[in-house]
Image (cartoon, rainbow, N blue to C red; front, top):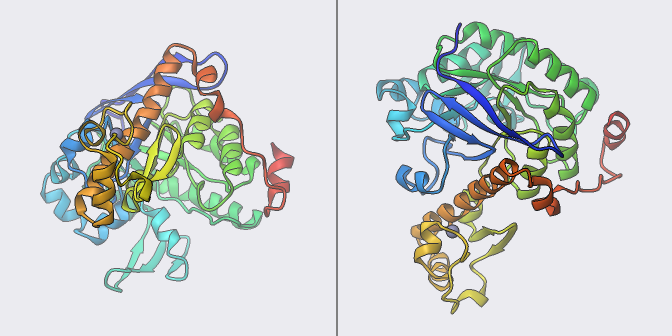
Length: 386
Ligand SMILES: [Zn+2]
């Protein structure tokens, strides 16, 4: 099926790393990469209106197929005219396949070749999710990018377990491709392979042969040490085609994003900015700190005086400290606006540095890999293969 209105254009290539700055055209607008994408799990980025979200600099937003299938159900979203219209986000949207959430329900689910059976944590009903069903739901939701239904093995897992999951994910991908019905939605494949770099490489190669419109690296940030994520991404991202967008799923910390960009990754998503906001945690200039602390009670300066966001331009730390201590809903909104702006801005600053070919100098403090912890399970296999 020919794909309409998608094109990835590489604008600049870093001369000291695989980092690149790109312009990715989708049916709902252009995404300037590298770019952080906020997560709107149930068709809302928690506590933030679409207008506020535009002001954070976010260009593309993610929503979760699994959650939207359970509530309100894809047919209601389709009746509303699709996800863009339902949630009133006019920019590019991406839905995940639901695989990650289903596999997180260990104990509640049963995996077979056909698909996964699980009990809905909402109402206890039995749900059978297959690659075809995931694609059908995502076709109805109507995001610009949809993801293949994959099996995400836990960490740690044995080589045999990861091989079985990776092989099944490939067979499921072929079923996803056959089931996909819309030429205005780009179906991305997901490279799995756990912490086994040779399995990652083999999977990447077999996915590239399918000539998909984009590729993701999945199955990271599942409890493994940061050094593992860095090693997996560094080994895998350069194997993916240069003329297609590359997306690292579920990663949104400063160091992991900077190092992944150095490996050639373009897109990120993470719930971190809004989840941290719920606990009063602030991301600012590479650091994390808590606005609830007593030292901010009489601090009338902004959260970050270099930040252009509405929160920093309008309110003081003292006021935010008060809102958090009073458990006011507005605290959550204002901190989320700031934290999302901060992570989007971090990727925008990296993008600017790539365009000027200053990335590896300017972001050097973020680019030193973490040491591999020798006592972790399976570290020997990772080391042998890297
Ligand atoms: Zn701010």
